[in-house]
Length: 172
Image (cartoon, rainbow, N blue to C red; front, side, top):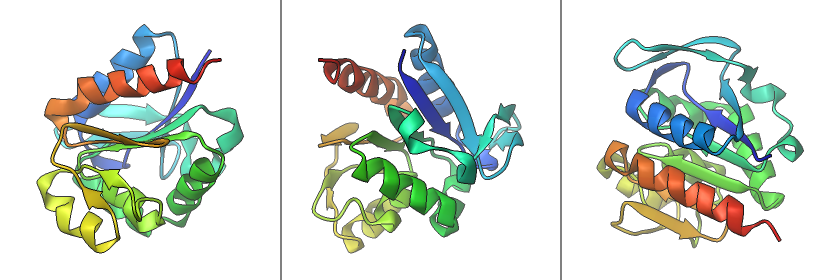
């Protein structure tokens, strides 16, 4: 069974992206851990309340096949979260799938793993990606090695399906 750490901001995560991605993973019977800055309530941009099972600092990368960051305005705050930075670098170095959608690819950029990589992001993050050394690609979903990025809510189902495909292709 594939294990996914699904990371959301404590406040103002994108509910559509969360629901689309969560539902796609659940349909595959993946084991999903919802992760945020702290355990407990996380609140979406439209007031949806979900429960974070784990805090960013408590995640052991080796227990997961993929680390997936959901976008939304609150995701911008994670660029200042040292646990998020450590988690990304650790997952990337262990060749786990590291994925982010909407504005969340900027978190990967701040962690330093997008330098020289192709990636997409919502329009508000293009300059940040480019300034951090990424090659911006204007597509819904972009895969470069073990990094998968999505452009926003309209791409969330394709984003989730690409992660599923990459996880299934990794089974040999």
